[in-house]
Length: 227
Ligand code: CA
Image (cartoon, rainbow, N blue to C red; front, top):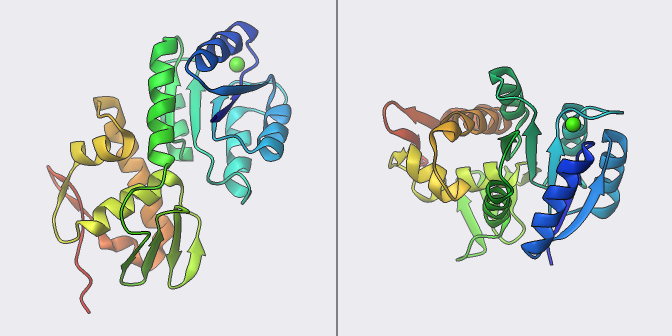
């Protein structure tokens, strides 16, 4: 059974989310402030975290940054809850590298769909266990990525995006195909998320970041290695 940790100080919302997740077959843990949330995440290592941004004790961004810094929690997908439809909140959440976000108020059904989609893309893809591409090595079972034989901390989303592009090297990949394949669904609001993840992915690849090319009007492409 997959376990979800809800970090949300508003009792009504936490209970509503917990009720619906349990009904959908998930095991649920709750934390009501940022400090407890971080503590439970580190101790319990849930399969996914639903993280509210406005929290007492320690705000959601701070909790999120800590989760991504710690090797025990770096790979746990996070769905952020933002209080308002304010652009600033969204952009910050995406820049921080959240796997997805929802703006309050949201329907429990929408949350469940997002949780399922995020978990699905955190699963190991089928097919050969290893895929090599120049200095890149993808361990598909463990969702681990190696650059020049050094382990590199990619999130599950970044891993899937890069693998998808490298397996189709030389051919431009359509934005909608990338969104559908990696996120499980495609909608306009995620177009920006895609660009943010690509930006972070390029940063993490260092010199090799330029291998990911933007194809105007289409999407992204990784060129075939020259050797
Ligand atoms: Ca809150």
